[in-house]
Length: 327
Image (cartoon, rainbow, N blue to C red; front, side, top):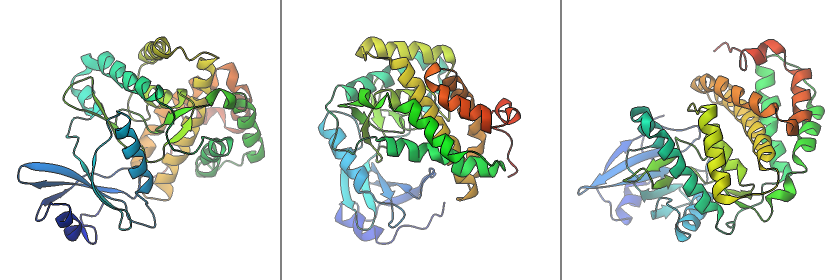
């Protein structure tokens, strides 16, 4: 990340009432967005720089306003200039779920229960003004695996068979995600802030929200790419969600379906971040993601996809949780 300030930032901050604020660059994420903390007169706010053409803050703004209007804790929008990609946000502070649990691991169960409580609240709302999570989108995401991981490992695989396997695994699920819930798509310990207590979650990184299946954000939380969640805690929190919501149908099978789909996508994205964007640190997360994917593939609902993996991905790569990469 460069520390160079965004174009037009002084005028933007001045118009928002933050003239002459101190601007502190923060660590970046896996996108082209950059974040800064601004301070003035003992107050602080967050500045998002999401410059076009690589970024567009409009989906973030739409989702944040909908979440806040419906009682969820997204950052309040203080000022915006979507054409320049500049947004001034409420500052949720420093206490992220991931780092809090690193320091206070004995609170893990309570913190995860609170995160699921927030998810339950979201799922009790009518779905937001977002597009549907379609089969086309599930396939586009899953395709990341064969488009990026397989070439990086020198594998020539059956692409049409991969698409057909996912079609077979997911088609029966689609009717069960109607009318649907708002799916934030990146609901995990690095995107949840603790706001003054263990039981109030501030939401981040929801600009790609869609309307889809309630299991998606649950599996995102409990099969976290960036933090170990024990199988015991995963099972306990899955049961906690089911007790709270009584989702009906074969919810465990759909959870496995979406876990496998999401984890295959993430493996591909992490390789893309290395190969295309020069961010090799994401490769270190792949063994965790791969292990979760293998657990998902063991469910009978994933039989077509498991058969494809058995036929196309060498056993030694799977045994090595995704294999090694020459960085």
